[in-house]
Amino acid sequence: MNSDYISKLFNLILSPYSIVGLVVGLLILEKAKHSQRLSWLLFSLCCFCASLNKYEDQWVSAPPLVFPLEQLRGAGRPLTIILLGVLLLLGFMTKTKWRQIFIPEAVKYLILVQVVFFIKIIAYGDIVFAFLAGFTFAGLATMVIKGPACWLQDGKSFHLGVWSLGMVGVIFGIINTFQASINMSALTFSHGRFSGTTGNAQHAAVLLAATIPSIIFLIETNKKWNLTKLVWVGSLILVSYFLFLTGSRTGVSMAIISVLSFYRHRVPKLIGFGFIVFAIAVLVSPFLDLDTTAINAPITERYISAGNSREGAWLGLWNDFISYPLFGAPLRGGRLGFGENSWLAVGSTAGLLGFIPMLMFGFECLKMLFKLDNLYRRESRYHLQVSTVIAALASFLVGSFTEAFLLGNLTFPVMALLVYLSLGKYLLDVDRVHSQYQDVS
Image (tube, rainbow, N blue to C red; front, side):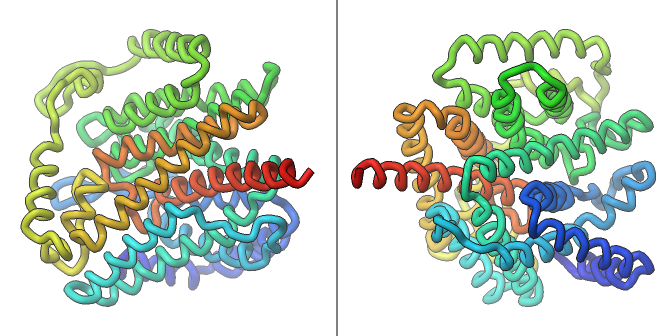
């Protein structure tokens, strides 16, 4: 978050389209109060807009996209803030039912990590940025707790929650397919790796990988082959194809962990899924440009290379942690910068004050995984729901060791993580109430 985002937000609000947008927004808000699917779709749109970004540095700037995608990408952060505000209003209008506590324990510790970041930036960095980032994360956490987490009250709302995350992959896939049909190079300008409408290939890979558990759930819940199931199968193929083109070993590892975790008790389905993915890779490989150049190595070489490109960064983060164990290394500039590991990055930038709650976050995630697996073994009717959350959380934890996406502020990975944790808490709450009812009867 910086002054550029604020100016874009005000320009958007003061533009000639703002009045029309305000009227449409109020109508959608009124409709969403009575439509669960529309409410969850608004969350999907907020997640997608949060992923929009344009890569720029002192040497390279991302090529423009076709109309209106370039304009949409440029207004990504302001649109995210506007949608965040709409979802906050919806959340405060939501009436609680049988569930009264919606915050998973892991989320409390993640919030505490952000509080430590806020204090450090206030003490040593850019105070204006600290308050902007702090208010943004507070708004995001409040939105998820009062909105999506609170909306989870029955099986239908759980299905819609998963559907909303799957829809992020569908929206991303459709928009990037439209751009690719006109000019694919605008999406692969950086070393031939697919970054799509995100800031870089790693961001695209994490987004795509994070939606895979939800899409598999939506495929599995449709027992018969119909148009809906075909659409979700097509979405999974498209998401997997774009994920391959990112050249991200982190993203592919997350996807593999998702599939292994989802089908961990169903070996035949796991083998079948692996065969389908292999067949797709063979079919599409003739259409890929695998020519080798000095700066554009083949995508396939990235997956088979054994080198650790993050070893130097990890060593630097560890040395910072050892040198400044209490409150982390001094700021380099007015704000925090994170290396390529969520856990070491916290130790490096916030010391033990941030690392201890981060470890507690990880511990609570693992506790939820074990509790959900126990629920899977006891209740067959929750197999798909439990497998979806386990697959998502496992992939997030694995990916967090090579990317710092757990520490984002207003980003899709953080939004998805908070919702997946909320989905897991809902399942455990249902099991707890069901067990209490059985004890009484």
